[in-house]
Amino acid sequence: MRRYPPIADHGLVGDLQTAALVSSDGVIDWFCAPRFDSPSLFAALLDHERGGHFAVTVEGEDVTTRQLYLADTAVLVTRFLTPDGVGEVVDFMPVDRPETATDRHRLIRVLRVTRGRVRFTLECRPRFDYGRADHRLDLRPDLAHFSGPGTDAYLQSAGPLTLERDGTDARSVVELAHGERAALILTVCATGAEPPAPPTPETLETEFHATRRFWHRWLLRSTYRGRWQAMVNRSAITLKLLTYAPTGAPVAAATTGLPEQLGGARNWDYRYTWVRDASLSMQALMALGFTEEAHAFRRWLGERLRSGRTATGEPLQIMYRIDGDPHLTEETLDHLEGYRGSAPVRIGNGAAGQLQLDIYGEAVHALTTTDAPAQVAGYDEWLALTGVLDWLTTNWDRPDEGIWETRGGQQDFTYSRLMCWKAFECGIRLAHDHARPADLAGWTEARDAILHQVMDRGWSTERKAFVQHYDTDVLDASLLLMPATGFVTPRDPRWLSTLDAMEGELVSDSLVHRYDPAASPDGLRGDEGTFSLCSFLYVDALARSGRVEMARYAFDKMLTYANHVGLFAEEIGRTGEQLGNFPQAFTHLALIGAALALDEELDRAEH
Picture 1 (tube, one colour):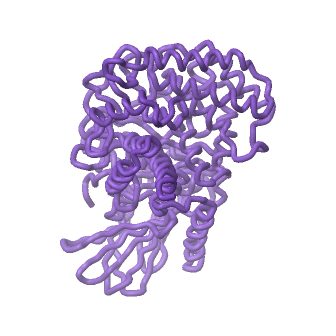
Picture 2: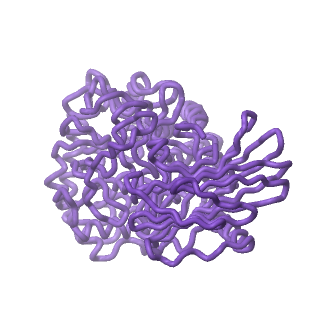
Picture 3: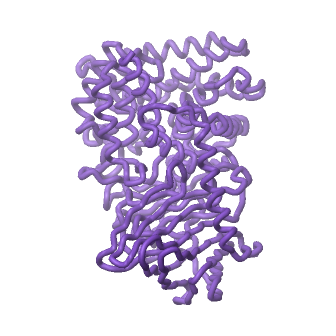
């Protein structure tokens, strides 16, 4: 077992309420239960000694590992190629009534040998509450019961596998021959809940096939038939895995604390629902035909608007817990060393209290983009939406912290103004199309004032480009979304000039930086890699602007940075390594958007 495998060296399994990372060594080194934002049970990825892990490995000097997903599913296979045989571990989480929140979650690990003989080693070392709490172990040969604070974890074995005590942990060694199988079932539930029933080969086989069928049937709803089917499907499944089904709220990533710079302090908790990220995720899924997910998120977002519960006093705050709780107090886990020494490890997120006005554009767009007029929000929801836009008419012209959540002070960010313009544009269009009551005069005045202001103050005549905020000439890759929002046409001379400027300053071998922290201090120590979201937004912008061959080349090159199972973290480092929380929804939604835009432009060119 490696001390800290590369961030990208993992696959993701989940049951639409929580998820686990499995390294290509067969080690589960990140798992929180019962929800994405719950305390961890396994967190060796953040501290090898204290975090806890669940390993099924094959030891030896000549062992080669391979990892893959079963096609179009979230069933992960880790294969071990040894001189004596070939074995594999099949990891999955059954998807049982995902829309009903539950404290009971199961990880199933099936061990099997397809050639020769293979000797597997098992270690289950849970560390409750981010490694802060002790636990007790009650052990039988086929059952390990780990008791932690408020949580029980039951590890059951099936087949020729006997569990042994190792302090308060469990371990085992089993040698299987060709055709033989064993299984491990980890059930996490609330203290005092009914223990799980003993597994049988028949029930395990049923669970496996039911999980495969769930993902196959879900993906059949996709309308995508373009050139990058496998990558788009994998991104769609990833966005689905990162969505908390009981509320319809997506999280930004499955992890916390994974660094944007090794050894640095840019280590944030992404296990929450950002209004921006979630709105864009649902738009990506809607574009693929997944309307149920989009409508579920709209209901969640509408409830946030109607409840008026924010910690900031604004109509919306930038992020919430997946159940809509607005309180995300940030704290550091100083007992954890962090991934490869990247401290501090943070839980909660202090950025929740920031003012980021762009979220109103993403939110209103998500609420007003619909596949049929019958899906337009009802009267009460419309009143909540008009209340937001009425508030925005007198608040859009405020400095804020911007999309990148900088901690260097508020500014008049151009992207924030752009998305406020988008909020009014969507609201005006919907009011016209469906004859809804609205302050159209006030909204129109605000919309037009924003456009004039951005063209006047957000445009640098010296740089011949739109800039990050009004008091700088620094470029910002978030503005790659300008053509997609409709704020400028893709062939507008100002836009093409901005794109040229970005290519000269922010783009490195088709990879795109968010901005230059040295030129625009963001209040944070350290540097960062290229931002994968922005690299895919660059492809989208190139395609829309008629630079189709450049777009296709940049897209194909970007796909080479995906990990071995098609997943992306937040950033790409200097030597091509993936950095930041993993997998990141932002990157995968942008991949989908880039593929759709590029397909459309390529089809147009071919015809």
